[in-house]
Image (tube, rainbow, N blue to C red; front, side, top):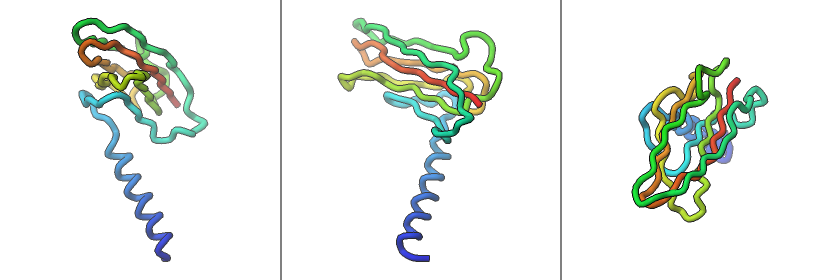
Length: 128
């Protein structure tokens, strides 16, 4: 095995390990955005939710909980979750998973703003 091939294989193995380790457990909080999409280009991914959350801020912290779908469950398991912070001022909040997620049929998240700032997120959820 040549040096270039070895580096490629080692990089791929490290990425596989990190991607697997990056699966978010319930209750995990991240800054800014949440991206859990093991196979982003997979043609089997079907967009189920495509929504924007835009809520102005106030003097304190804004916290909101959202469940998808709003009632019941998706017919198929979730294959890809994208929660993108759209704040252009770098003052985005955090995203927490409260229930469900990847391979589940439901997702509940909590969005939390920085003090004095609002929520500005794009949410996309795909199923198989």
